[in-house]
Length: 317
Image 1 (cartoon, rainbow, N blue to C red):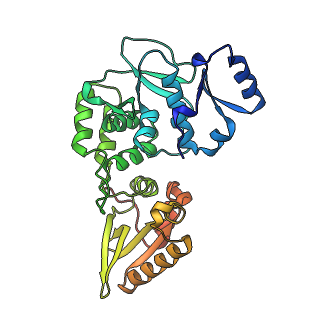
Image 2: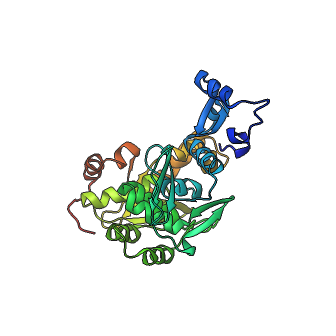
């Protein structure tokens, strides 16, 4: 759930005759309101209804609304606006880019990055100035942990096989953003993230698992391999190792809990459909192994799981 800026109370806009800022500070201290940013409040019940990303997006809008100068949102803030996922919790600080000679300290919940931007690196989204998807992936590749960087790149590059939406960026877009930013510290790391990014990783867990497969030296899998039998199309598997005729499925909770992902089906029906799909794939004499988030995110646990499934290790990609 996302909230609109209209749900915010901005103290600089108050009519002091009827609505004093001190009262909002007292209400925040008493828990009736939540201080979203300096000079911005929201009723606590409304704040509690928002998810982590929704709260962070509202905090971003609160910071923008309480600043007199326009700002270009970047890094984690731009990722949230573009819908790029991250590992763990969203931050509380809002990230912005200032000119390399602008100076200024990071304070009051705003982190300033002194970087050079080209016109092509900035877009407008719902009235906000934001680094483009490609530039955001580049900045995350430099600043975020490797798992978050790869997840962001994969989501940007994802090609929807059902053609419901176009990719957020192409690999060419990422390379062009990289070239425009050169020279910069961390360019090798960013280059590796761009090269490693995939167009067929459909969930953060698939991205995390693939990166950790590379870390542990697991044989490189084929992504989204299609299978059919006499009844017709069965489905695509997250991972497939042709030499061993083994398929792998990274099962995140979203497959069963997210209404959009379920496509109108109940969670129980999704489980039954998955079982039928697995039975049909196994009938093709294909093995299958499944793992959840706690395994995929842990290289040691994933290694043990895949070795048990019969995969050799120590392979360079």
